[in-house]
Amino acid sequence: MKKKHFSVLVILLLLTGCSNQLDEVNWKFWEYFTNDTAEEVVEETPVEEEPVEEEEQPEETPQTEAPPETNENQYVLEEPFFTVLNEEKVIENTDNLLVLVNKNQSLPTDYVPSDLTIPDVPFSFEGDYEKKYLREAAARALEELFAAAEAENVEIFAVSGYRSYETQYGIYNTYLKKWGKEKTNAVSAIPGHSEHQTGLAMDISSRSAALDLTEEFGETPEGKWVKEHASEHGFIIRYPKDGEVITGYQYEPWHLRYVGKEVAAYMDEHDLTLEEFFDRAIKQ
Ligand SMILES: [Zn+2]
Image 1: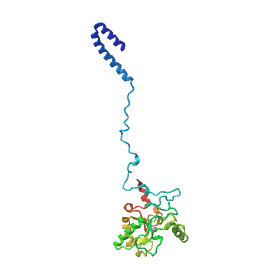
Image 2: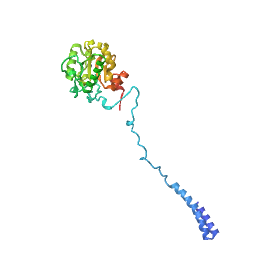
Image 3: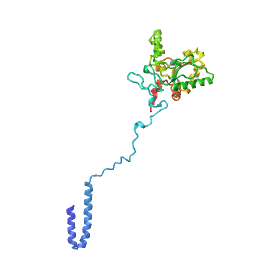
Image 4: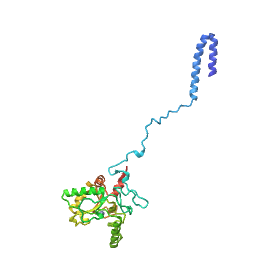
């Protein structure tokens, strides 16, 4: 192609014989020639890569920051409220107000809540015993529940709250000698496995149930009132009727557990035990 161009140029030069004309023709030819060359050069030049604009691209949102998917059966709960266990299934975050104590997981033998206080409510007995105590938050909530009951002329009594590991040890072994292992385990917790050691549980009764802790309390007007209103003040009936397969305990209409108003309302609405609640709760 270049030879051809050159030949054309020579012929043109011969034909013109004039330097001015030659310059004009030569320029035209040169333009043609360089255009041709330019195309070849373009072909040989590596294709320029698209500029990477990493800095201008918006940062991708990490998956962990995305809000968890929920449905009406789930409850989004902050991580510290989930019970943490060591290898022996002993609870590590013992002061968690939603701590889950049951037959599968226990409190450390030396765990004593640091904020135990006596709630200002009527008790079924006189004297300053450890069973009068509850943790601060539970004590204040119990006072609220009892005040609401009193306002509706419902007379209830606190019977048994905080229980130390040592006390539970004594109770359990007394039952064990009397009833044997199977019956004892259905009604009494192995030391360390009692919810009363959390300081968040209170057994209650009424005169109509002879101030006893029996299933009959659930059938009394007071027992029915408590079942209906406990959640409004942050309590749940921890061992409901027909819940033994889940909780490991027979029906105990007298055993109230403090979980706070929001969780209690949710559990009441969805008819859940505390075990089922944690099965459905998702970590935030
Ligand atoms: Zn109890």
